[in-house]
Amino acid sequence: MKKIIAAMLVSCMVLSPAVVMAEESTESTDSTEMTEVNWEEDIVTPGAFEDVIKDGRFVTFDEIAVQMWVPNVLEDVELTDEDKKDGYIGYYQSADGSYAAAVMYVDVKGEDLEAYKTDLEGMDDVSNIADMVINGLSCVSYDMTETDTSAIAFTTNDGYILEFSFAPVSDEDFMSVASLMFCSIMPEQAATSEASSAAESAA
Image (cartoon, rainbow, N blue to C red; front, top):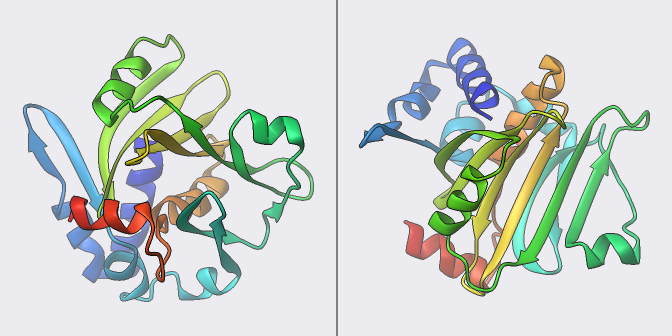
C-alpha cells in the first residue's frame, strides 16, 4: 500500500502543486507515520484527475453507508450466497479478470483497529502495515505479497471490519487507478448511519 500512496502523491504533485498538502500532512509519532488524504481537497479541488474521475462512478453498500469511486473498467460482479456468507459486500473486476477490487464487511466481535493491527502483525504474508486517515476516517493499510494485494481496513462502531482490497498492485497502471479508489472511500454524503458518526468522531 505504501507504493500506492507514494505513486498517488507523486502523480498529484506533478499535476498540481496544490496537492503537496497531502504529503505535508504526514505526521510522525513514535516512528509511526500517519498519512492523511482527503478526496475533496487533495483530488477533486486541484482537478488533476478530473478526466479520469469522469470515467467512473460512486458505489454505495447496503450494509454500511460508505461510498467509493470505481472506474468503469471494473464491472460489478454479482455476489453468490457463499460470497455474502464470507463477508463480501462488493466485488469489481475488469472484463478479462486481470484487475479486481473487493469490499468485505466482517463481524470481528468488537475488535478495534489496534487489535486488528496486532492480528495482522502476526500473519506471515502481511507487510507494510501503516496507519492512515482517509477522508476523516482512521484506518490501517497493509500488503499481502503472495496474492499481490493491498488492503485498507476500517473498524465500525458495531464491531465490524470494513475492508477494501485491490489487486494486482504490482501493475503500475492499475496501481494509479487503485490509488484514486482508496482516496475516495468516505461516508455516503446523505448518510445518517454509523458511518457518519464515525466520520464525526474521527474529525
